[in-house]
Image (cartoon, rainbow, N blue to C red):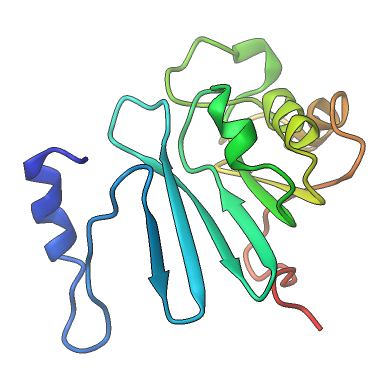
Length: 157
């Protein structure tokens, strides 16, 4: 459960009839229209949740900000798409709290047996394709860097 001062922040996300800010709690299931949302608390200095979104037999996990933790593997098990935080290069693993490397994202994808991996929350320096190479050290499936306006994978015909 987020601290009380953070709950107040979510109320600021409500705007007229367009959006409604709601606090999501860890280890809960929510139904919103045809979507089922599951949550798990991540390992990050600030309160943060990974989410699994399922609809019409397809699923996606967004890790959000997190360090590697074992439960994330079972949470992500067999999803169609894993969108994983990949803020670190392998050489920085363990040096910045609350973040994973491309290598760790690949390990997560392998252990969870996901169909596809997209790396996001990228570092602001270095060669981003190195993250893909590091992910592929563990995961043999399709890996790519998230791109603004990139193609849609979820609910494709």
